[in-house]
Image (tube, rainbow, N blue to C red; front, side, top):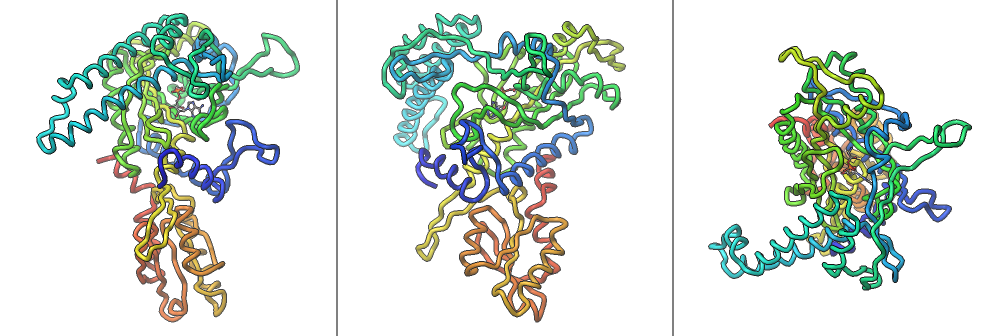
Length: 515
Ligand code: GAP
């Protein structure tokens, strides 16, 4: 589609025009960083959820799902560390009055240096052609080496200052790197301060500290507090997992970039409980498995990369992100974290209850270690929309806008269209829908020319359009048009079910995960 900068704008306007995503409470001019999913958006979102849920719960004998409450006992957040440590280091530019996350400013600076080094590598590739050895070039070219060393230095300083919560050192780093405000261009910064991201509210009618509760900032804690309930009632044996999909809330200071960073969003999280000492094996397993899940959607291997965390969260002993090439560049889509036994031990300490597992194989009681996979549903939605939206030049010189959604996730799997509104064709089209609707989401469309109707279906990502014409009444055959190739072929009505199933069934995606 357009230049990358324009792509996000195109996605936002396409999403609104076709009923995928609307600004929330738009009639009141909207509420910042809050969005509503429309009629097609909620279908797409449900399909993403279903693919995730089935791949986790249905495909793993040892993973079960739960649905915990959003409100939790306030001690939960004390135990998890969110009351004391769920902060963002913020810094303001005194001239533009804009507020930034200090760590993000530094990471963006690092990314610029990395791009310089990559440019140099591309120059080398052009110069040396087939004999180019990237690894050797990176290890020997002075410009690349200088930039690589610079990045390592900055990352080390960032790791140390953020790790020690030394906010003076974080500010010093920003000043030493001469980072300027992207709006004012000035380097006139305030001190760095910590800001807690949890939303709080009051329970019942009593005000005061005792009744303060939080909107959960992650779904994971609902899993931890239910660890024993699920283990005992489900007779689960370590290693086993608990999955959950649900809303989470964070008072993000810099909430922007459409549904990428919102204050109310949805997470799909899975906690996998393992024997202590085996966590790294499972960490690698889940990294691999989650990347496969993404790859099977066909959004392009080149659009994913792993990024190891520089600053580990307070609960983790290893952590990485799966980053996606969003219209704004590579950004976090999913986190994979080795959370140790931190959460369960903390809940033991604050609740006074034992949260241990007796492992019959080694005859020992222990608090399991946890590997977590955590993906933002809204970010996944954006990744799919932004990589699927294409503008294509056709052979006849015209242009079409097509949403190449993975067919299994498309809101509608098929549109059924009578060629004309008379001669019994609408009735025949509805008859076909009445057969298909039990297994596939179908749309009936009789308005405008067939060409216009095809374009409408292309724009909302419907993988198949079926046209009913006079021949249909004679021999029971219809024309099936493929969204991606635009090829049309004549098939019998009886074949439709199988054609649709083959391309649009989530089961096919799930099978590809087993390979
Ligand atoms: N339980 C671990 C956890 O919450 P996280 O990295 O803070 O880890 C996990 O969040 C995922 O949730 C992220 O990778 C991202 O996809 C999504 N996410 C986090 N904050 C978000 C926000 N403000 N808006 C949309 N998605 C968000």
